Length: 104
Image: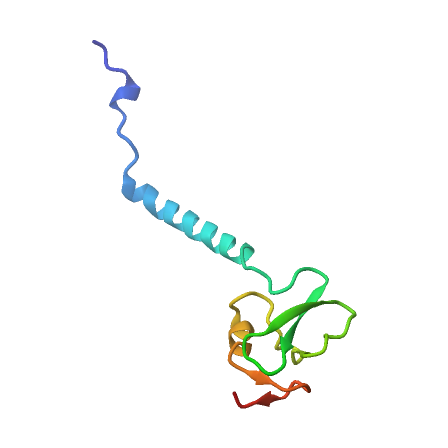
């Protein structure tokens, strides 16, 4: 039996391949994580906070006022993604009909 060159080649050492795979996997996870964040409201809509409780919110079409029982979030403090900083924060706060925080 004749031994060919391909049969005598050693496979690439794992210690050379694994770091590259780890980096590629980490980059892929980071990219997928950013793309998969669920938005609080869909395109053309903005979130509003329910008056008198911690967990009520809804989405209103751009250009429309919030319905009765809801207020706009303060500028720059509206939640954008489910579970983001403002989404978690407003889940602990009660507001009145003018959007002012009240004890809960």
